[in-house]
Amino acid sequence: MTIADDALVREKVVPNRLRFDWLVRRRFMTGAIYGTCVAPDDLLRRSTVFFCSMLKAAYCGLRALLVVPRLDRCTFWIMRSVFHFGVLSGCIKPPKREVYGLSAPVQN
Image (tube, rainbow, N blue to C red; front, top):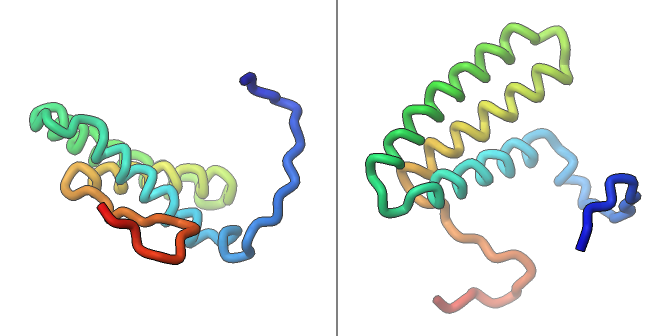
């Protein structure tokens, strides 16, 4: 398998997945999963990731405030900040597992 940089993808997207709030939730959950997986058995490493993410979230939030007139850059920094808040959350508590596309609950 290779990467095709010039590939065109045409896929129908559910309209609610094109909304900013859905993208924010997705970015947050991506961070939460990363925060959970980064060091499941190493408290020192997890603590380090937690505090670094706290600083990164604050930095990204500040950068977003500095570029408010430029919507594209402001959105970029907001999304980065949301990711790092997700990492913070994942370091504290793993996200609830959600399975898509199944009509019946999954048995663990």
